[in-house]
Amino acid sequence: MSVKPIKLNSMVGASWGQKGTLPIPNGPTYHELILETNASAADMLRIAITLNAEEIYVLSGEELLMLERYKRRDAIAGHFVIPFSDIVARTKNGVRYTGLVTELGDNIHLDIQFKSKAVNAAALSIQVHAWVSNSQAMRVLVPMIKRETMPANAQGENEFTNLVTSPLISIRRMHFMHDNISKLEIERDFVKEYEANTFISEANAKRNQRTPQDGYFHFDPIVRGFSIDELFPTQHSSNLKFSVTTTDVPGSIPILVESVKVTRPEVLQSGTG
Image 1 (cartoon, rainbow, N blue to C red):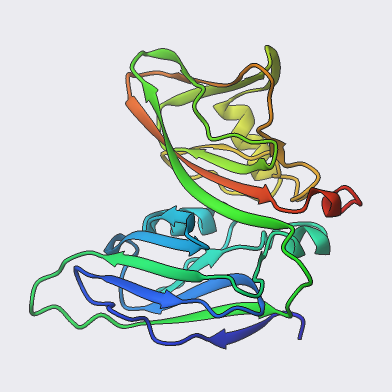
Image 2: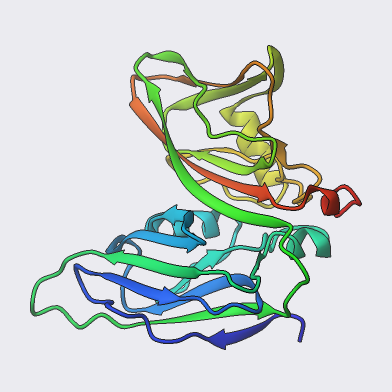
């Protein structure tokens, strides 16, 4: 089997109202972590994965469900997926390079903050599994999921220019969390890179076997399945501006950003798919 399931150790400190922690062993390439639990999505307030002192994943249980539903993966009670590899990629390399490759000396752990419950609630049950493949010689990409927040104090066009950017960071997807977004435009160095209203964005997503989620506007440059070649680079000289048009005054719009950080650019230059 090229990808196989394994059971990880028990999570330490996992109980209602507390934070559970689980060290992730080095060695294999991690494609997904699976949470087998009696907790609901709403019960998992903050899920974080830390790699060598940097939080590379920060999201909630509800956001885990949203990511699965967007990819047309059926929700299963008691089963939550933390994705590393992009399993909807068209090519083997597109899946392989987006997994979390572990290297000798890595310090990796999973933290989950659980919601408080009444003293008579059923005890929390959780077991973490992983889908893994063999170790790889080197880590080429680090998958990341983090939240940004853009100000949106006007009805109509609101601009976001504070995305964390780098020549080494590229976007997989951005999920704008607001249900009254009618249009998204992206400008890099005063050149328009993207312009789509909600109808065009959602029609394209559905045509490519994705399911737009209520309350979100999805910017998905890899929607066609080319998870490396069609990443959206954040590198720019003067500006990288996201202009979101709304039909109300949101105040602010949270954005769940799926991205990858390149650790060895020379490997990608040889072509991956």
